Length: 179
Image 1 (cartoon, rainbow, N blue to C red):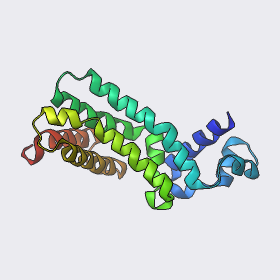
Image 2 (cartoon, rainbow, N blue to C red; image 1 turned 90 degrees about the vertical axis):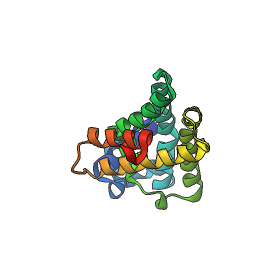
Image 3 (cartoon, rainbow, N blue to C red; image 1 turned 60 degrees about the vertical axis):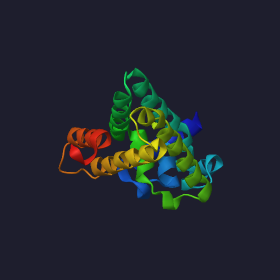
């Protein structure tokens, strides 16, 4: 229960204040634990973020997968893939992990995050193949690039509404620059 409370506090801190807000004293204060007790659960901030990814990423992936399963056609699956990921941007679990840069993580943590993202990208390879892409894996990575750019745009608080950014990302994923 303490570990779950620490992870929840870490999500809140990262979501509210970014990387600088995630400190062991702040975690201790949020959970009512002694600072030394936090070190019993995690050796570093990177370890906290790594565990957040291990716990939260499968939940996001399941949400994306479920949205795709509800879609009837290959095109609808690609649309669901993009829309569901962008809908998750507002979720504080997602905001927490985005708040910390991969450069602050050790190589093992970065590799786990890359592998998790690879699993996410793999979800649309089949749909893109059905749509006639000769290199569906490459196309899937490029679609994920569109999603990642839209995530950054939403996170930055761009002038456009999140819904408009999502619609543009879906259009780009399905129709390219033709709109």
